[in-house]
Image 1 (cartoon, rainbow, N blue to C red):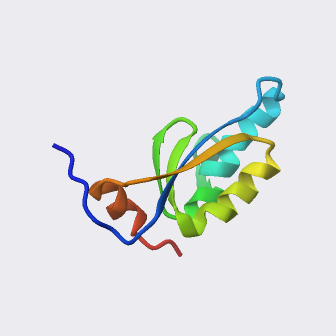
Image 2: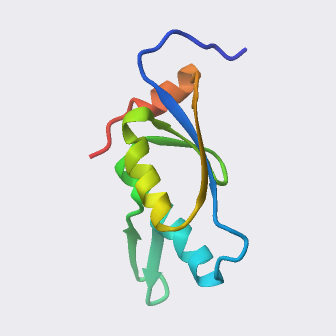
Image 3: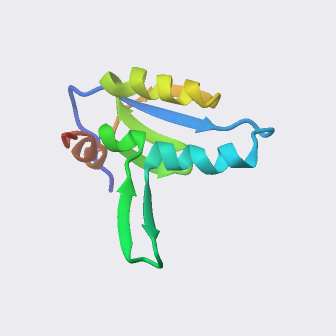
Length: 108
């Protein structure tokens, strides 16, 4: 059974997607910039990670294009998504205990 409890943190669910007529090059680049990407070169000899926007804030990915974020992070996320011309819906939700645990972790 999932437990819900009183909390002080306001949590928002963000549902987003790119418009159907978006160019394939943008469709490929958008998730790399949002989530980050592991990159290797010379047949795997050199490996590094390209940092994505979401690596700077605590979030929980529920499904493709559906994430939970803290209310205090919503403005910066919406600014990022607006820059990619995404279609976005935002709602406040009552988070589960495990959602709060993930969102309470500090990001540097």
